[in-house]
Length: 213
Image (cartoon, rainbow, N blue to C red):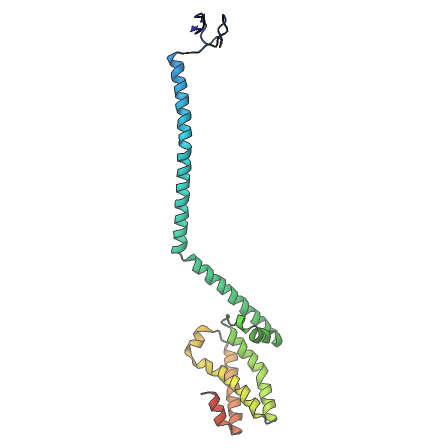
Protein backbone atom coordinates (compact mmCIF):
# COMPACT_ATOMS: atom_id res chain seq x y z
CA UNK A 1 0.00 0.00 0.00
CA UNK A 2 1.01 3.57 -0.70
CA UNK A 3 -0.04 6.33 1.68
CA UNK A 4 -1.27 9.60 0.19
CA UNK A 5 0.83 12.43 1.72
CA UNK A 6 -2.18 14.73 1.38
CA UNK A 7 -5.22 12.93 2.75
CA UNK A 8 -3.52 9.90 4.36
CA UNK A 9 -5.66 7.43 2.40
CA UNK A 10 -4.14 4.13 1.33
CA UNK A 11 -3.79 3.13 -2.33
CA UNK A 12 -2.58 -0.15 -3.87
CA UNK A 13 1.22 -0.10 -4.37
CA UNK A 14 1.95 0.40 -8.05
CA UNK A 15 -1.69 0.40 -8.92
CA UNK A 16 -1.99 4.12 -9.64
CA UNK A 17 0.24 7.18 -9.71
CA UNK A 18 -2.43 9.40 -8.10
CA UNK A 19 -4.57 9.18 -4.93
CA UNK A 20 -8.03 7.85 -5.85
CA UNK A 21 -9.55 10.04 -3.14
CA UNK A 22 -7.91 13.47 -3.44
CA UNK A 23 -6.03 13.19 -6.71
CA UNK A 24 -2.62 14.00 -5.17
CA UNK A 25 0.42 12.49 -6.89
CA UNK A 26 1.63 9.51 -4.95
CA UNK A 27 5.35 9.21 -4.17
CA UNK A 28 6.91 5.85 -3.42
CA UNK A 29 9.13 6.49 -0.40
CA UNK A 30 10.06 2.86 0.09
CA UNK A 31 13.77 2.02 0.62
CA UNK A 32 13.85 -0.20 -2.42
CA UNK A 33 12.49 2.55 -4.62
CA UNK A 34 14.81 5.10 -3.09
CA UNK A 35 17.88 2.89 -3.55
CA UNK A 36 16.90 2.26 -7.14
CA UNK A 37 16.71 5.98 -7.83
CA UNK A 38 20.06 6.56 -6.09
CA UNK A 39 21.69 3.83 -8.17
CA UNK A 40 20.32 5.33 -11.37
CA UNK A 41 21.66 8.79 -10.44
CA UNK A 42 25.09 7.37 -9.54
CA UNK A 43 25.24 5.43 -12.79
CA UNK A 44 24.42 8.54 -14.82
CA UNK A 45 27.08 10.50 -12.90
CA UNK A 46 29.66 7.77 -13.49
CA UNK A 47 28.91 7.69 -17.23
CA UNK A 48 29.13 11.48 -17.43
CA UNK A 49 32.45 11.51 -15.55
CA UNK A 50 33.87 8.74 -17.75
CA UNK A 51 33.43 10.75 -20.97
CA UNK A 52 36.25 13.27 -20.30
CA UNK A 53 38.48 10.42 -19.10
CA UNK A 54 37.86 8.48 -22.30
CA UNK A 55 38.51 11.58 -24.40
CA UNK A 56 41.72 12.22 -22.47
CA UNK A 57 42.83 8.63 -22.99
CA UNK A 58 42.10 8.84 -26.71
CA UNK A 59 44.03 12.12 -26.98
CA UNK A 60 46.98 10.67 -25.04
CA UNK A 61 47.11 7.55 -27.24
CA UNK A 62 46.84 9.69 -30.39
CA UNK A 63 49.70 11.94 -29.28
CA UNK A 64 51.81 8.90 -28.40
CA UNK A 65 51.22 7.38 -31.84
CA UNK A 66 52.09 10.67 -33.55
CA UNK A 67 55.28 10.90 -31.51
CA UNK A 68 56.25 7.33 -32.39
CA UNK A 69 55.57 7.97 -36.07
CA UNK A 70 57.65 11.13 -35.97
CA UNK A 71 60.49 9.31 -34.20
CA UNK A 72 60.35 6.54 -36.80
CA UNK A 73 60.25 9.14 -39.57
CA UNK A 74 63.44 10.75 -38.24
CA UNK A 75 65.17 7.48 -37.32
CA UNK A 76 64.72 6.04 -40.80
CA UNK A 77 65.83 9.36 -42.32
CA UNK A 78 62.74 9.35 -44.52
CA UNK A 79 62.92 13.06 -45.52
CA UNK A 80 66.47 12.60 -46.81
CA UNK A 81 65.51 9.44 -48.68
CA UNK A 82 62.52 11.21 -50.21
CA UNK A 83 64.75 14.07 -51.36
CA UNK A 84 67.27 11.61 -52.79
CA UNK A 85 64.54 9.70 -54.61
CA UNK A 86 63.12 12.91 -56.05
CA UNK A 87 66.57 14.06 -57.14
CA UNK A 88 67.34 10.72 -58.78
CA UNK A 89 64.02 10.76 -60.58
CA UNK A 90 64.84 14.22 -61.92
CA UNK A 91 68.32 13.17 -63.07
CA UNK A 92 66.92 10.06 -64.75
CA UNK A 93 64.45 12.21 -66.67
CA UNK A 94 67.22 14.51 -67.90
CA UNK A 95 69.32 11.53 -68.99
CA UNK A 96 66.34 10.06 -70.85
CA UNK A 97 65.82 13.34 -72.71
CA UNK A 98 69.42 13.43 -73.92
CA UNK A 99 69.56 9.71 -74.73
CA UNK A 100 66.41 9.92 -76.88
CA UNK A 101 67.80 12.88 -78.81
CA UNK A 102 71.15 11.13 -79.27
CA UNK A 103 69.61 7.84 -80.42
CA UNK A 104 67.41 9.72 -82.91
CA UNK A 105 70.44 11.79 -83.98
CA UNK A 106 68.41 14.88 -83.25
CA UNK A 107 71.47 17.08 -82.86
CA UNK A 108 69.48 20.31 -82.69
CA UNK A 109 67.46 19.03 -79.76
CA UNK A 110 70.61 17.74 -78.09
CA UNK A 111 72.23 21.16 -78.57
CA UNK A 112 69.22 22.75 -76.89
CA UNK A 113 69.69 20.54 -73.84
CA UNK A 114 73.49 20.85 -73.71
CA UNK A 115 73.90 24.53 -74.53
CA UNK A 116 70.66 26.49 -74.08
CA UNK A 117 69.50 24.53 -71.03
CA UNK A 118 72.90 23.48 -69.71
CA UNK A 119 72.20 24.82 -66.20
CA UNK A 120 69.36 22.30 -65.92
CA UNK A 121 70.94 19.34 -67.70
CA UNK A 122 74.20 19.63 -65.79
CA UNK A 123 72.32 17.87 -62.98
CA UNK A 124 72.45 14.68 -65.01
CA UNK A 125 75.52 12.45 -64.55
CA UNK A 126 75.29 11.76 -68.31
CA UNK A 127 75.65 15.41 -69.31
CA UNK A 128 79.31 15.22 -70.37
CA UNK A 129 78.79 11.92 -72.15
CA UNK A 130 76.23 13.45 -74.49
CA UNK A 131 78.10 16.74 -74.72
CA UNK A 132 81.13 14.81 -75.98
CA UNK A 133 78.93 13.00 -78.49
CA UNK A 134 77.62 16.35 -79.71
CA UNK A 135 81.16 17.77 -79.88
CA UNK A 136 82.26 14.80 -82.02
CA UNK A 137 79.32 15.33 -84.37
CA UNK A 138 79.73 19.10 -84.62
CA UNK A 139 83.39 20.14 -84.45
CA UNK A 140 85.58 17.71 -86.47
CA UNK A 141 84.00 18.81 -89.80
CA UNK A 142 84.42 22.45 -88.78
CA UNK A 143 88.04 21.81 -87.81
CA UNK A 144 88.71 20.29 -91.23
CA UNK A 145 87.09 23.24 -92.97
CA UNK A 146 89.24 25.64 -90.94
CA UNK A 147 92.32 23.55 -91.77
CA UNK A 148 91.57 23.66 -95.49
CA UNK A 149 91.03 27.42 -95.29
CA UNK A 150 94.20 27.90 -93.17
CA UNK A 151 92.05 29.53 -90.53
CA UNK A 152 94.41 29.07 -87.59
CA UNK A 153 92.23 30.95 -85.13
CA UNK A 154 89.27 28.67 -85.80
CA UNK A 155 91.46 25.58 -85.62
CA UNK A 156 92.84 26.65 -82.23
CA UNK A 157 89.35 27.40 -80.95
CA UNK A 158 88.00 23.99 -81.90
CA UNK A 159 91.11 22.18 -80.73
CA UNK A 160 90.88 23.90 -77.35
CA UNK A 161 87.30 22.67 -76.93
CA UNK A 162 88.08 19.09 -77.89
CA UNK A 163 91.33 18.89 -75.92
CA UNK A 164 89.73 20.39 -72.79
CA UNK A 165 86.96 17.83 -73.01
CA UNK A 166 89.52 15.05 -73.33
CA UNK A 167 91.84 16.35 -70.60
CA UNK A 168 88.92 16.54 -68.21
CA UNK A 169 89.00 12.74 -68.14
CA UNK A 170 92.50 12.81 -66.65
CA UNK A 171 90.93 13.55 -63.27
CA UNK A 172 90.17 10.19 -61.71
CA UNK A 173 87.11 11.65 -60.03
CA UNK A 174 85.45 12.18 -63.41
CA UNK A 175 84.68 8.50 -63.99
CA UNK A 176 83.33 8.05 -60.46
CA UNK A 177 80.83 10.89 -60.89
CA UNK A 178 79.85 11.02 -64.56
CA UNK A 179 78.51 8.43 -66.93
CA UNK A 180 80.61 7.39 -69.93
CA UNK A 181 80.37 5.29 -73.06
CA UNK A 182 83.38 3.30 -74.26
CA UNK A 183 82.72 3.96 -77.95
CA UNK A 184 82.38 7.70 -77.41
CA UNK A 185 85.46 7.81 -75.18
CA UNK A 186 87.56 6.06 -77.81
CA UNK A 187 86.24 8.33 -80.56
CA UNK A 188 87.16 11.39 -78.51
CA UNK A 189 90.71 10.15 -77.93
CA UNK A 190 91.17 9.44 -81.66
CA UNK A 191 89.87 12.86 -82.65
CA UNK A 192 92.13 14.74 -80.23
CA UNK A 193 95.12 12.72 -81.48
CA UNK A 194 94.17 13.48 -85.09
CA UNK A 195 93.82 17.21 -84.48
CA UNK A 196 97.05 17.25 -82.45
CA UNK A 197 98.93 15.70 -85.38
CA UNK A 198 97.47 18.23 -87.84
CA UNK A 199 98.33 21.12 -85.51
CA UNK A 200 101.90 19.82 -85.21
CA UNK A 201 102.20 19.59 -89.02
CA UNK A 202 101.12 23.21 -89.20
CA UNK A 203 103.84 24.23 -86.75
CA UNK A 204 101.34 25.20 -84.06
CA UNK A 205 102.90 23.17 -81.23
CA UNK A 206 103.52 26.17 -78.97
CA UNK A 207 100.02 27.56 -79.37
CA UNK A 208 98.55 24.10 -79.01
CA UNK A 209 100.33 23.23 -75.79
CA UNK A 210 99.61 26.63 -74.27
CA UNK A 211 95.94 25.77 -74.57
CA UNK A 212 96.46 22.54 -72.61
CA UNK A 213 98.61 23.84 -69.76
